[in-house]
Image (tube, rainbow, N blue to C red; front, side, top):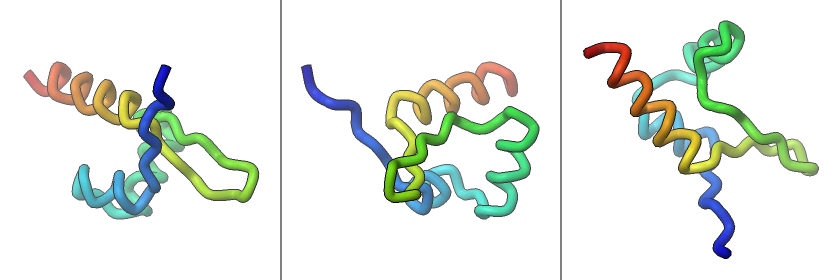
Amino acid sequence: MARPQMLKLPEVLAEIGMSRAAFYRMRTRGKAPKLIKLPNGQLRVRRTDLDNWISNCETAAA
């Protein structure tokens, strides 16, 4: 089984068109996709988590 694609936070921010500060405000409210902290301190988001989060945002706006 293939490992899921992991996106760096700047890649996620560019894709959703959001600033880092706005993203962290959403994260504080529990409204952002799940972040994974690697042992070296870097943050990642699974592609599937981001896609699901975007789908949920589209459904909520409809």
